[in-house]
Image (tube, rainbow, N blue to C red):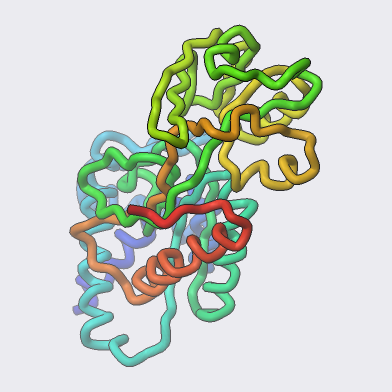
Length: 308
């Protein structure tokens, strides 16, 4: 029994090192000394007779064998946790670590309040709230769930829609000498693009169902929505932005909805998690709260449409 427990401990330490990005950070997370964590990694490498991590003065990265072991270790630890939930923790309070990755702007401006409420309701859950806009690989980042705006292409994940967000073409008033009367007039004006959603091609749909596609030259392209809003407010060009992000600017008049009858395609906010993975009670509760509270939070300021 002790040998099996030792092996699980070694694997858990290895996973924690990979997630933390360094031995010292993993040691702090585990409440151990750095030499102790280093010895556990060395023992694991000795057992498998291979190097699992490349170490330099400032960086630490997985070897090919380490990347394979990391995926296997996560599955094994998940299975062990499933057994604990079934036989030990069935009637206990919600506890444990929960790592969530969410979009930067949405996670910072709207979803963080839901995450805080969740942690307050379940104080024995240690919540890691990470904000990233780029696509992720679950096996590499070791998260429990991923909140993403737009399609989730990873077919290994279970995906639940939360709500759909309205997007509109906006500009600062000084950019528009006159309000354009035809949607085609917009092609002659400067445009700003948010990658990867736009970039030289802007599909628009009229309230009556008519569709068109603008092909403007982008004056500026960025993968950061805060930078895009700043450039739009400065009058640099027209941008397609979600209403949840610019509602205050629309109310103040610092940004104008250029053609109120036309809209860019709606984007769905999803929550994704491993479909084959045992779901700890804390993850189940978090998903339930997001499904319940995200539409309410965004609908309170008319920023969200129920997901279809």
